Picture 1 (tube, rainbow over the protein chains, first blue to last red):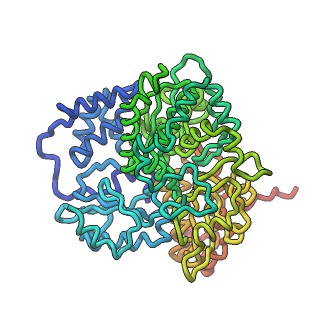
Picture 2: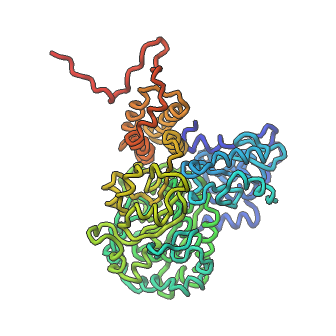
Length: 182
Length: 452
């Protein structure tokens, strides 16, 4: 049982067993990315407001948000790394660990639950070989999590795979959906 | 229209008229359908006049609270301060998916509404905060803003009037609580999405402590139609005997129903006809058992109560529930209410921002007890404990997430108590480590004064 998004933010996805932070850190905000960040900052009267967009830029280019990336974002926006971490851990969509190439979120909140969403979760866990929620498959391809209300309740069960939403997913459709992924 | 189903003749499609029509997504397509005429008209009007038209129309907030929109706008005065309009597109109330379709199919309709509202409240800058999971709506709205800006509809000289109207789109990152308006502002400012204590209200000190108006997507999208067609046209939709609820409303229907989707009806529509005629009633061979009519935070109705309820703000209150966001969740006779209410509680426990102890502890505690009843491990006194916790969670916190968790528990226990009792083990009572029975929680059994 988690106590709010603060705890859930990181807890949804488990840390992989192998170490991942030994390579030297390459900054995200150089060249075009730096320019994009500057343009974003200009939309708001305070630099801090660019924090969520900046973290999205990090995640889009690196796949997850590392402590080093948080420190870089902090420096760019004149915040402290601790403050940035506080924000990152509040929101469920920032990954604090590397995740599978296909990040699969299955909605299991009440409206989808009454339409059989839990069977869809089971089908994804079996077909991807992940076995357990929040665990990345051994080939690094998949991570499956349950997500709270995707806001597509009339299309139960919606499943979001990276940026794409698949509507009205049934357990029978799962193998075909997975086979069509790049 | 009942997207993804064809429009039902008894629907009143205004906002949903172009759902499923891909051409309406582009600027040219939107203009061909009369788009941006209302904005042009509004820009030629004094902001106070725009406020008054919306006030006269009776439009009320479609996000859940139902606050009169024109009145909200009228709090904004030409005081020379920086004002902001903030569009709440953080739709995440379980059962609600109307804003998603508005943004997917008619993004220009929303952009027009946002620009019109900005003019009405003396603001030159607007932000549209879209929840992080809404990737397609984000793309559509961003593209619409880009198109409208390139065409000179938005920008430093909006539609050639010399008026500055700038719209920015902001992406959330996964947190139900950010749909609460003060949490929404904190999140936009780059903070954790913790709700703020009110007062000060956003109209006094909102985004960056400047006067701010926050409106839901559906509310803002309705405004241009009102400005274009007049307040009387809008007021005509609704029950003649109830002038407090006017216009059309989008209802999202989901759960165990034959035709789930978005339906737009005039206020005052009979809920029975809505469920059984428009939405096709239950799935073959099943019967509707219960329904939550306004998103997961409002009280549950039984099937009998659904048959007499009227679909407007006052009608649903008379039925003992609320219109809320218009997210209708249907449960049929194959569902276990204990299981589903436990699942709802888990949602709130997951989404609590953990700022207030009543909510942080209450949502978690409620979930634990409900799940143990669900699993056949509950004892008789658990039901009283649940009600005592619910009482401690209602009206005592900064925002209403805590109350929202208590609501389905209290109404579920009231209307489906037999289902809970059937799962309780009568042979068991909760005891302490020493074998002493646990006292009922405070507030359940009032202490009797000692006789003199």
